[in-house]
Image (cartoon, rainbow, N blue to C red; front, side, top):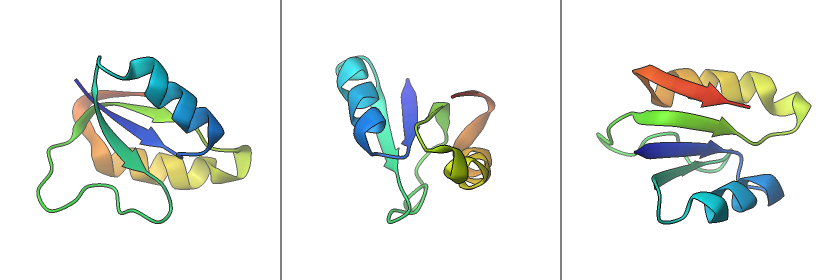
Length: 73
């Protein structure tokens, strides 16, 4: 399973550690573009941003999620 972590601050790091060994990660923050050169879409996006980042995270989730993917906030 490919999982995008949207926002890699304190909570994003906790989520990453909790899922280590169970999923392949795509770390997305404001300094890294969502998918690099032909990467496949992700199965799930975990949104780990503060409230003022929700619009950004929603836009990014639309770009990185597979058609049947899910977003978790």
